[in-house]
Image (cartoon, rainbow, N blue to C red; front, side, top):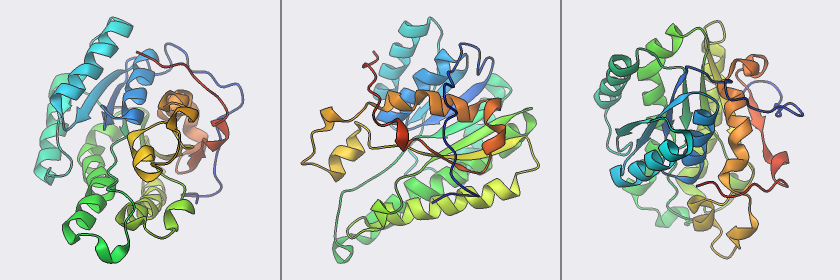
Amino acid sequence: MSACGSNATLPAGWVAQDDTLANRVILVTGAAGGLGRAAAHAVMRAGATPILLGRKLRALEKVYDSLETASGRAPALYPLDLEGATPRDYEDMAAAIERDFGRLDGIVHGAAQFPGLQPADQIAPLEFLRTLHVNLSAPFLLTQACVPLLTRAADSAVVFVLDDLERVSRAHWGSYGVAKHALAGLVSILGQEWESTPLRVHALLPPPLRTALRRTAYFGENSLELPEPALMDAALVYLLGAAAQGVRGRVLDARGLADVRLPTRA
């Protein structure tokens, strides 16, 4: 399951400080979703400026308002539909980030698409390709477009979000399962290619969380019994900051945090 070497865990007692990510600019994809929204709040509390990327402007604006209310600082918005975006769109996005901020210090790939559990022979071909694209091709192309900015920083990080590979190898997980397996391989490849650069590659393996994707896959489960995505706050900030130098190219297994319950954040 690890991308390169054994899995890592969040160091015992590690706590993000208000300046852990001070002055950094972090792009968060899927920022209106459960994990993306939590990531945006976490990096802003740690001193960074989040760029909220998502396909629905109104949903992004709600996250924007909640961040501004909570911190007194304004994040940035970048509406973009990963499903239909082209390599040129990602290049334009990177150019806009450089123009507006002059830097980029990290990416959290929080966007995901899961069409539901289906037998393989019933998956529509375009749906299979669409799910592969959003979960695998789009994160790669977006990251590739941002590499010049990321490697210009003294220290930068890209965090890909995995799923339990044993679980998504089972029947009916379709293109989502295929994409998550390929994503783990991509983390290993990129981690080795960029190991001598300022750009770190990480993967986060979260426990089951209270998200829309989880509800789609386990519709009979009581999602209120699961921890909220904010449980991943410390792990995400840790991976984005310089403290994670020693675990570059590896999977941070955060499933051991699942017995923690955090309050809902506005």
